[in-house]
Image (cartoon, rainbow, N blue to C red; front, top):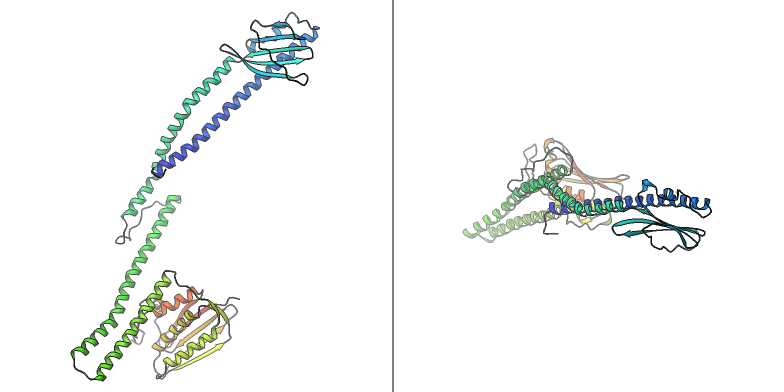
Length: 450
């Protein structure tokens, strides 16, 4: 079956189901007709038999002059009969009927089929006390009609099934033609022409739904290819800068004679750039795991206030040597099921971002608020702020927005996208509100599961 085409298999299944139903229906009709015919003949035989018994009993065992006329109803065709009294034959047709053994158990009727040459008879044998009557009705014509019907059906049924297969194959081929068009168009699609779509009519049938589903899938593939190309280009750009710096400084150190201090400066600078490279690679690896749904959360019940307190202490270390204030306010406490490593990374990314953009003499505040069903951690800074139309772009990968004061901080533009993804896989959210010249507030919300 697997070697045949789909339209052939559909037509075959259709024909098999239709043919089986057709044959069963015809057989039921023929059997029903035959049963009705036999029931009608048997009823007529019983009526004739009753008349004969009535006539014989009324004449004290001697058939009256019109006995044959009474027994032979012209409307019923010719009959065969035998009348007996105490097993002695009183009258019998010229064509003898077979001896039929009466059924035991009193006055009972026995009905059998009997053939004489090409003639067919339906024979009734009835006993009433000492009287016995065997009466046969000619059913040759009816039997012949039924036999001819069986022959015609044995010839017409295969022809009808073959015709239905040919017609079904043709109809299925026409119905599947749009699918062939869809397959041909899909075969032409590649990564270079994903902007094209499969043409479809504005219908709500199964084919219309299929085409729209495929077009949405192609659209998602196109978006994925575009994101992949952008990701590769941005990643290459971000990795190229520190590698170029390391290469230039090492080449400069090798071409010039210098003292130990100059070599040390080259090594320190190379180490800083190497750390930058490692941080970018780690971030890219985490993004790849999140995009591929391969990030496994190590959930455990932790005190969110302890996590925020640890992040505050790390912020104080990072801000050491700068004229910055880092404050921590706690309003309530809560235990939450989360991955503490990822949540700590999220908070640290927000704090590091706030410290980067806050000038000397500024203030960074970490505020934790616990509600009935969720907790919020606000990271406020007194930096230059973010323009309104840029506030959502900062959560895109490799996007670094220059502030209204023209300040541009070096970075890969991956910290905030990673932070938002961590919040989302925990069922939370990360938003920003900002006013130019005043500062920004990043808000991390996490539901509390009780």
